[in-house]
Length: 174
Image (cartoon, rainbow, N blue to C red; front, side, top):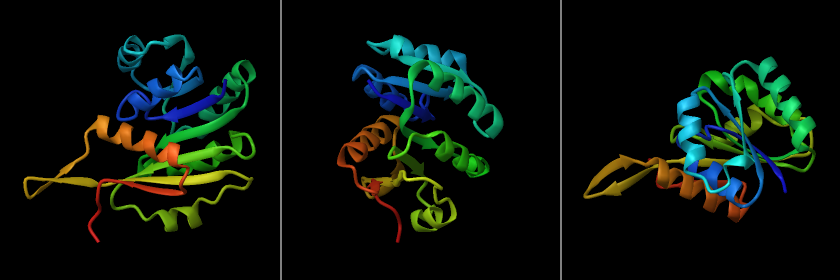
């Protein structure tokens, strides 16, 4: 049983949270909304594997303290899936610091982000697998549309299973 950490796990990554929990992993989810957390847990066949921490992930000190408490109970964090808004990128060093050596960190990035620039800017100080999953768009009837939460989660799960350092869900404009 591994201990997984997710930021964004009650919204667009809710299916990813359920996927890990239903594989019998402990999943620590950072959430701000108890109603969304309860809805997500209610739809999971293994809700006891989901451990909620209610806080704003942009508060690095509180994030570290809360994750450390969960590590004491559930064991080291071996994988992280994080969706960070641009005003929360400063928490990445905290995520890297709290992770177990040799762990995987999967950062979900938007269509306009540059994965290589982020990799240079946010290099972990320890031996971690720092991976990117970039969100794009889909073409439908000669139009572009954003991905649905289900398409995002499905793509993230496929990317994690592939183990590639960079994955793209959909397309991005070149």
